[in-house]
Image 1 (cartoon, rainbow, N blue to C red):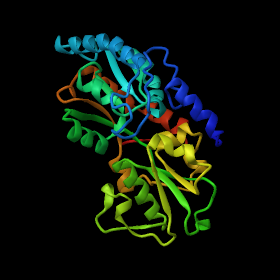
Image 2 (cartoon, rainbow, N blue to C red):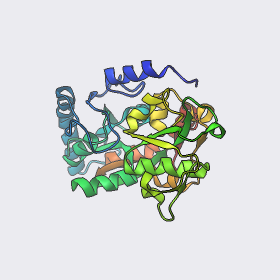
Image 3 (cartoon, one colour):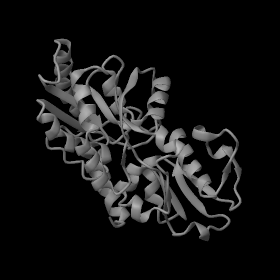
Image 4 (cartoon, rainbow, N blue to C red):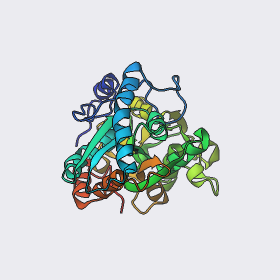
Length: 321
């Protein structure tokens, strides 16, 4: 995978409400949201346009049908409808690969794409959707704390290693005093970015900062680096303006980066961050045993889907064992 022209890609993303090739979702509605964000702060707290609200309303009937099937004692053998809210890359793409496998079991998987990180949780909490697939466990737990929701992990599917990518410079050894590095500004993702920079000798964090680290926890900054803190979805936009960018796996993909070919450094599979930030199927508490949810998780953890992930994402997405 070669690095693509960033401006064109991201302009396309905003136009269709998706990060990469998941915007066209032939079997499920597509929710197009304003202000794509990786945090719970936004100029538009509701996060949705009229179109996305309509899409969510349209899918609520199918979500209610799935709940009804489960209440009637439905089983994986009987099948039914499974409604899932997902972010575009790689989550919705992976779900598309799961559709025919679930169809073989009698399940109709309906995927709705959202490009923010708030609505997918809201529609699961409300019961409009059976599940969502877009977030890691720390984000889910923080969302529950902040919003009073009751979301739980129904199964870990993959993790997306953070990577350091070139901006105006292509080698960390070229860093000079006053250089700028762009990082995500939400708590969990900022910590991962800082830990990765620490692992590569750029900074040193205070003892115990760990997975809650912020720029205020930097103990040593020998290069006198300036950190430009941006919403995760916006970091790649400044790649031509800063020395380096530190990106989430899905946003790296959306920007045309290959972890294996383009990253200067990335989280290793045995790192604390990689193991902590596994992306999960999230459901409302009590729905973990819903037959459709169980069938979904089983298929997403199958050898077929693992093989697809390994083949399709060049190390940017790694199946969770």
